[in-house]
Length: 221
Length: 287
Image (cartoon, chains in turn cyan, yellow):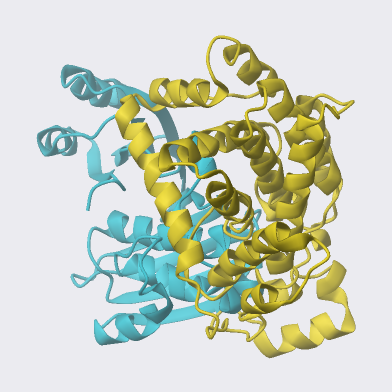
């Protein structure tokens, strides 16, 4: 944890976990979808469900889905803005298994019909953790440039991915592998120390066995 | 390599000013230039100044629980604490209310505790005529201690209770005040330790689960506590328990706290009959 996780962010209140963290959850989900959703089902769990209204958690997540950052003065007006921009929003309480108290499950659909489900938790001080994408476990914060790769679970694929990264001199901070079952679909999450070029991302996407490669860099717009 | 102990922080501060050690570590940790780190911290300081200046006494929170209190504090006649402390209390209320009303603040370390650092630093800047450069150094000191607290204990009320939020902010603020007054790194550690001791066990019991009551007023307590502890440390009143051990105790107390007292809005003040009535008016996942 660096000093700017402790000091900052500049944010619209009232709660770093229930408001700022919620904005970041919405923003990460939007980036993972790659576009502004036309439909958003937002399930709030635990403390998010109990106190969401008073903290503006609903408005914060929708603000993130609209592409706002934590310090955007328009966050309180996000529900109205979503309506104006044609985003259909449904917020409700629900129970998730073994989830952190501040967790949301966002099921969002893009204009082209692609739907993703993102489970993420707000850890305090505005920091978040993505727990799962489409039901497959994945743990990352979005603080570093991150590759989320959906790939077939077969020998050698990780070395091919890391070969591409090392050829481009990209330094890997963390690597995580998750799979639903042996030989099934896997999620490889790679956090890097610096931003990654589009060409490198295309090369990884083109690797045999890679189903989809999503790149997340919260520092870029 | 971020700081995981106050001991390590003090070791580094044997060779250079403590704020400088935190800055140097940030540059190494994030791989950034000194100027970049300083600019980012400078932006946070300017945002802190703005968070107090932008306060609108007419604004109210969504629940109606917060707003207008800072103006009352400012308008009070002669106070027991005297004009300087009155200014500290007013500033704490300004920023904390700004936060409750969905205004813009700096989380330090959290939004719920965002009033503490501006409350002690803004009046001090006026009083000593300090420049922005010096105020930014204060923030590095606060961040250095905050980093250790976050790593050994917690800065989340849901995890560690209010001691993790107002308590952490108060400890960070106390250390920053000692720096501003020219104290030693050891005195900064003492001030932080004393401030945390005084907040140990403080529960997170927000009425209706909102960052309003008692959170807004606890920012005042956190600021006043930081002032008293900085003064004690500067006078040579040391903490018998080293700062790292106080932080570890805070972590243990946080773990022992029942969930009802960790930001669930189900215990403490939130569970009183009035608290429950307010909650009925304003609860739910969405508006």
